[in-house]
Image 1 (cartoon, rainbow, N blue to C red):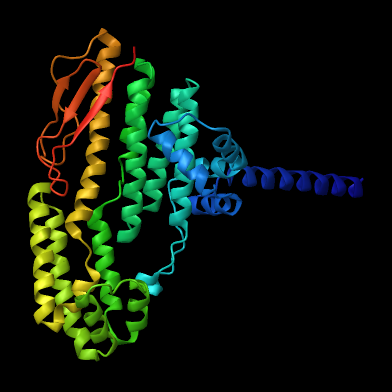
Image 2: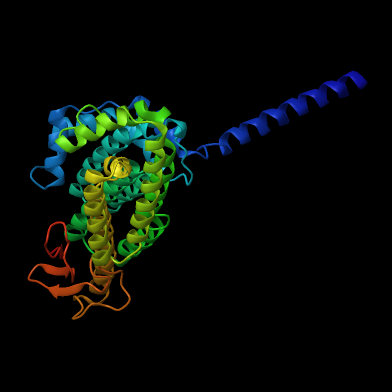
Length: 394
């Protein structure tokens, strides 16, 4: 009797352990680090040929419909894209970067993320052609989420995340112009865009991080790392070639004074990034000119000249992307009014997301096919007023 009871106890305990283990395994998926799933996707990813990449680009620009080659590429990458979509919904993403490598930190995921984003836009286009606009928009939202995972840990990752956001923004804008405007879908999309706007990549955070890492790099024992980061084609002009020669021969004192100059000028750049766009662009241009001028006369400014990018251009790229995003969110509110009342509003509703080139409301104009949202100040890099056209499907 005791033996039977003991066996029953063991059997029951073993069964419970199996159930507990099974439950924990099920609850452990997906993992709490999105990078795990992204890396799985990248291992499975079959890169499209150059021909297929060009077809996908033509699809985005409305030049062609989906081809058999594009469809085959997407089918071959179906499981990889499923992993990417699951990863995008995981909040945390730690790529495991070795920051001790400084500016030479390896980020192989950036190219793969861009490649999968292009595939997602192609998949979205096919879904839109088939009339499944909600699924098409969901693919675009996945790209926005990927952009948050790429993040702003360094300037290069900020630029990639901005490019991803721009890609998603343009696709959403195009789909809004061709889809039926139903209140339910538009309200869902509005909520989704509000959600992805949280923790958007920040140029300020990227620059602060860039400064921290560069300050560690600007020292004599890191010369090889610095020059390797710059690449073989970096020293194309006479000034840069001469500056690189000086860096190769530099002593610790050279790097000490360069760290001090670089820290001061980066502080000024970071402050300028917080200004409204028109003021910020002007200040950043002035700072770039000052660095270039100082570097020709003062060796202490050489590293700043080599390491600081075209900050005004980077600032503009971010404002471009954010302004399209805001225009899209504003357009959704106009489409919702159209869906509810049967006609476009006569004037722009109050309290909509703003034009970041001016800091004010968009200018609203009804057109024969829909409406325009126009910025009230120039994109200073292009020297033009940007406007965004939205159509109303018949």
